[in-house]
Each structure stands twice: as C-alpha cells, then as structure tokens.
Image 1 (cartoon, rainbow, N blue to C red):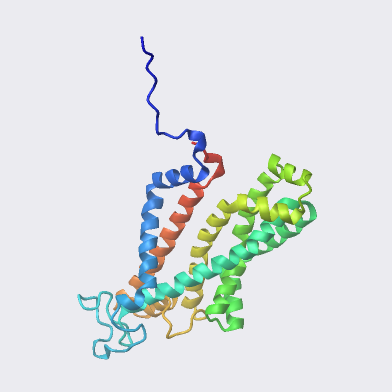
Image 2 (image 1 turned 90 degrees about the vertical axis):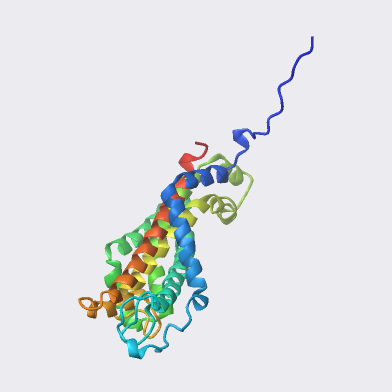
Length: 297
C-alpha cells in the first residue's frame, strides 16, 4: 500500500509576507484612495507635459479679438480678459501650484522629521520645549500669519515655499514624535543601546527607518496645505506675481467677472478643489494602508 504525499503548495506562508504586502492590499481595498491616486497621477502628468498639451504659451495674447470668449470646441475653458487661452493657463498653473506643494512639503519633512525624532526619543526637557513651539504655531492663524510674512517679503515663489514650510512642519513633527515614542522602548532599541550604539546611531539607523510610514503620510498631507496657502496668498495679491499663472491669482481675476463671465472663476476653482481633494484622499488612503496597528490583517 502506497502512501500518498500531499502536493507541494506554491502559496507562501503568511509570516513570509512583509509589511509592504499588507499595506499594498489595504491600499487597493480602499477604492477612494485608488481612484484619487489615478486622478492625481493624471494631474501630475498634465502638469509635467503642459508645454506639449497646449499649442500656445500661458502668457501669449494671441486671441485679443476673442477677449472674454466663453468655452468652445477650440478653446475648452474660454479666453481671459487679456486674450490668453484659459485652458493653457490653468494647465500651466498646475505646475506652479503642485511644485510649490511638493517643495514646501519636502522642507516640512526636513524640519519636522529631526524635531519629531528628538522630541520622541529624548522626551523630558527637549520634548517640552518642542511641544511649546508647536503650540505657538497651532494658535496662530496660518493664513493671517502667512499674509503678513508674504507682504513683508513681497511674495514670490521662493518666499511662498518657505512660508508654507514654516506652517507645514508641525503635522509631520507630531506624527514622527508619536511613532518614535512608540518605538523607543522596543526590544531592538534596548538591544542596540546594550551593544553600545550611540544615540544618533540608534536614531538614524533604527528609529527613523521604522518611522518611514508617518514620514510618507506627513509629506503627502503637507502638499494640499501648501497649495491652499499659496492659492490664498495669490488670491489676496501677495503670492505668485503675474503674469506667471497661479490658480489663486486666476480665481481673484475671475471674481471680478463672475456675474457675466462665469468661466473665469469656475475653472481655476474646480482645478484647485479637485487637486486638493484627490491629494488629501490619497494621503488618507496611505495613512490607513501604512497604519502599523493593521499589519498582518
């Protein structure tokens, strides 16, 4: 009598599946995050390839005979008050708004990451001091403070980036601090300390790499905050100076013609609202997918 052996299975045991596997499947299960990610990729591609998508430059006044024309098959978003194609300006405005969001978010991480790691790991006086700074930034209205700083610095791309980063690092710092506080008493940290690892070696080699999830989420969620801040400053006239296209600047223009030429206010408002919405939903989806409390589910 022969004894049959079970056929070998190709399925990997669940223990061999890393955190990335579960994070990816949790992200795919979130339909809103997947759709927002696809829309965000589409917007990014439009911004990158803006010069190839439009036949004219954003500041070319080639349609002076059709000033304030409504949307048509030839000009999808109409013509503005200076004879410029509005679709072209909105697409090029995406480059300005999104690039400010990305650069400001990068600076926010560079500021918030080390401060959050220091506050979470050392605690005590360092944590108290950093938390007091965060409380000061939390009680100051960001738009009013940014408006004052922008007026003093005369606006401009670089100044707007610095102002947005100045108010965007707080969220990143708090997320990293919470993650570091959860890890600083783990066994592998105590083992590294027992083996003689220096404080900065432990932070750089163990703490920060294990805090990559809040860093990524903080970076993504800082982007819409910077975009909204830039749009608000440009709307108030102290942001990106004309003729460089900016969505906030275009909304400000459209308000003046809103009751007669609705398209001048509608399309840049929709562009800003949709972009901020999809980035926020994508960031929320990443946060849920990378949540360490859900690993292995």
